Image (tube, rainbow, N blue to C red; front, side):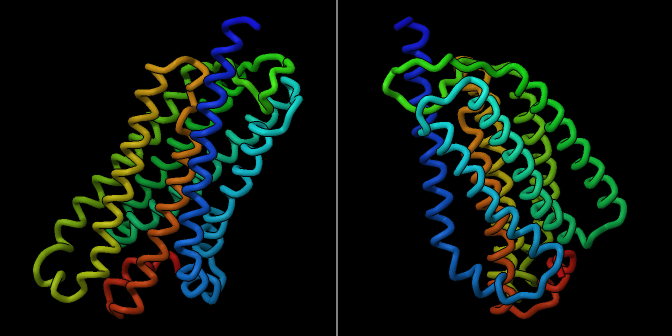
Length: 278
């Protein structure tokens, strides 16, 4: 067996463990928040935010099924592997976009849905995710796979791809940095004593949790950028599934926590923050 194939198989095993661990995180969080989802989402009326929430919440399960397929099904051809990877990649882009819609609406809501900011941020959002989709399409044309050999290890063996994918992580990182900054600036006013005394838990759910979520996503995008330039070519999407899972988990938690706290703290602040989702 060629030494290059041995290295590719070793990398495929590492990739497999990373992706499966991200799926475990997804399922674990689902179990932790299922009761809250039932009480806060299932019984609510149907609207745009509920639809976006459910797509963001459950689409990663489709991603997970595809990942299991191209990691564990034996005797897959290069064509099948390429199709499975393309399907996974587009689900990652589509799902990440939906998750960012939730976080974007949350950011605009704390700014009172300012008209000028809405126009600027929506335009920025469309530009970022359109560029991300174009770059992903270019990247998918460059991915390569090892021809099937009876190595005893099932699944696809990715042998490389263009570093252009790192530009996708940079775009997402920039967008998360902007929304983090907007949330942080607005949060300074919310933590003034007169507001904190009134609605401490709700303010935490809206501002503190929001800033923490954006920070996590920003850091993960930064790590993806660094790894894409320092690891071998077949690790170009090393933490892609982790980023996908965190997008889903954190954006859904953002909605669940605010709705939970709104029942505890029946306030005008809640009505302002969630006006865009009702």
